[in-house]
Image (tube, rainbow, N blue to C red; front, side, top):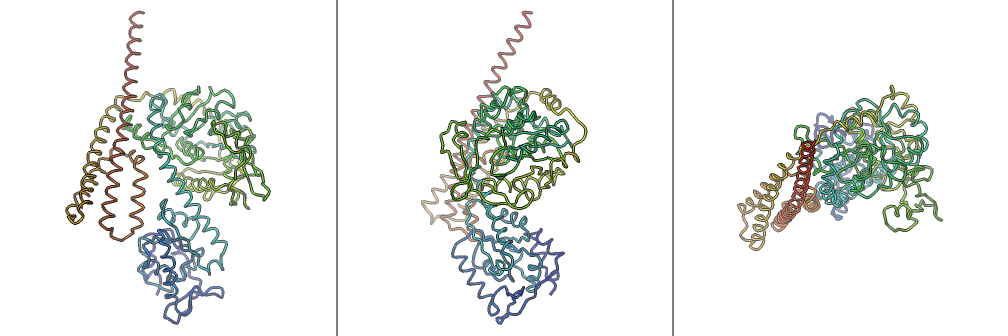
Length: 640
């Protein structure tokens, strides 16, 4: 039966449109043979994908073994003719990602068993390339879920290299998701507190949104501090008047040592990294872009101009900016797990195209960790007795932060594809950044902005163009222009924010937070009463609990940054619901989840109210000071 006639592509496309699009133009290429039990198995290169006798029974035994591990997500490398998938859907509630390295193989399998209604199961995803595999896994995975990866022995035999690459993609995607979740849960409270602490400094500095589109169509070079930056500096100095140079704090010293003054320097760290600005010359002529959560000391360094950029990862700062200027609203940058990723988002907000990467090795090029003269050039890489890479002179870097540490540390190095082919060693933490760069490049490409990796060394980043810096600059850079003058003109022309408007928004938010707390306390009382008398629980009682949850969550729509206060507990609730799958929860489970939600919201409303009160206090102090200054100015005018 033709595949299209059976509607299988349409079913598969409901959850996996990219895989379905690939299959539409892919002809079958494998044979299939009838099994004695009546099923069919693929035959390829002299081997069969399953038992010639009873492939369905074999698949049920396989699914029982996997189900015993109680996975939340199953990555299945090798579809065969689908019996394994079918058995897993019957025996588990897990979400399943199926990967086939050869689209012709999957097309052949679907032709052999046309009319599979379960292809539209919402728990199921298909992938036919490493990129599709990473996206499909991220679609179903959430930090904390149990993952089981199963490799079909025939796929291992026929295409072991594809199997190894697929397992790396899954491991990298899982690590990236886990690290991002850990960062959000661990750091979000700190970001909130620092944003409140720095409110006055943020109000004194123009929003980086005043630079939006200032360099539309002009190329930007984002200079990171990887070892390959050394090679790029002579050429970058030659072309520095025809590109926008965006540095990060770590690379500033290397640029200045080469006679290059960046047009913007971006620092995102919440740690005290003033040494990145002060140990490489006079900072007073720098144009600096900080985040609201950057360390307080960075707002005190004397610079020519200072901007504050508001990342999507800090919803409180976005709420504050939108309250200050509702017509313009929030103009965020993309944010990211590294300052370099944040700097690329910043360059994109300027309208730059292309955004050229240099020094973004994300790997240990030539067994080195950093560019010469960069902030942490003192850290070296060595080989230990077994030939493994280790960091040395780590104590010197830690000392800059007032921390004592060991002097040698394991680099935790793994091999990845190199910028120009072959392999290069990198750290597992860098793997996360490589994955995030691939995503960011795709997101910017959809907006019509290109990211070109001209690092000339280090790791290759999927989806980005890779070419020598000279060729890119010769093609993209046009006439010379004064980037610094445009930046400073935008800074000096920026209007002061309307703080009275923010005061009114804070007053409304305080009322909303109090209402959330009131609803949450009512919910806690109701749930605890039902837990004491479970026999009295009926549909009406549960409906009243649900109504309170909905009302409370509607109130929270006006306070989106409260998510950072409740992220950890809600993450645990979401995990419990995901693990339950389609199973109906027991009464005890339902009440337990509701109680956790209400307690979390009560505590968040209390903490959020305290943060709002601190914001209100800062605004009152600023208003009082402005009144005194205005009064003094008026007195001086009358005296004159």
